[in-house]
Image (cartoon, rainbow, N blue to C red; front, side):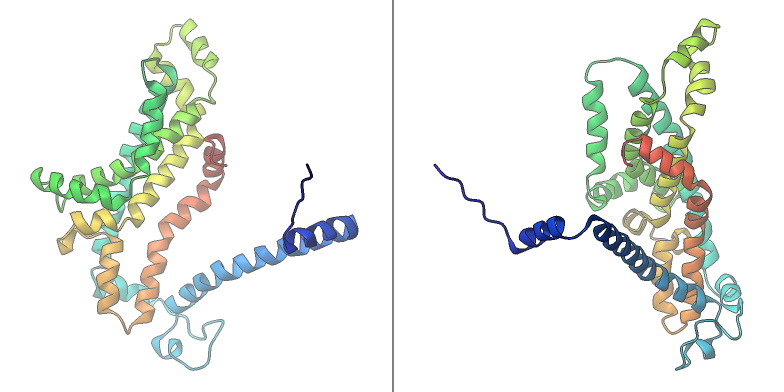
Length: 298
């Protein structure tokens, strides 16, 4: 019996490339290809951000000029001033900050305690419970938001800070718990056992030993929870219908419709909306990367 192998043209070309092109040449080609991909990514991601920043500090006449300016001739902060004095943006901003910080606190406390318990305590079905927590995160937010709307309506939690904070926490917690569960698995229990020998209670050993060692995971959970709440549209659109309670994603939608011709104002609103998430990631990126890598995502 004879076996025949048929290769596609691309596979034959790759075979020819590997066998006939010198290794040094292959290395140079790989280096330049990598540089090209990094450069293309920076342009695709960075150029829209640059246009947004530039438009936010350009006067209206200069912004709509037929001549494209890479650097504004007359930069101004009038767009930012008008944003807070002529629109409801400040109210939307405050609502988003309260919702995001509340979600972050509840998620960090709950996920830390749940992750620690799943790691350190033994009970029937523990592993399946932890896996089901992550599985619940796979449900699309819209499927959870509709029944949540009916429950929240009966509990009179619509258009309230507790209502939107609990909704965002419920959405973020499955992944947060799974991340902390994986992170606490990397913290050796021998450190806590040493604390127990010296008379520390389990609660004190967790507080003084385990939690400080799990700090990168806790910070990763903080950033993730904050970002979930800050950018959420689905839950906020269903649960927050009053104008005074709207968060930034919902408020921005109406804001864009009202200010369709004022691009400077819209761009300054976009900059302000991106600023908190940018600052969080910029100052805590080392903790974030370490938390995700130890948690098994890196």
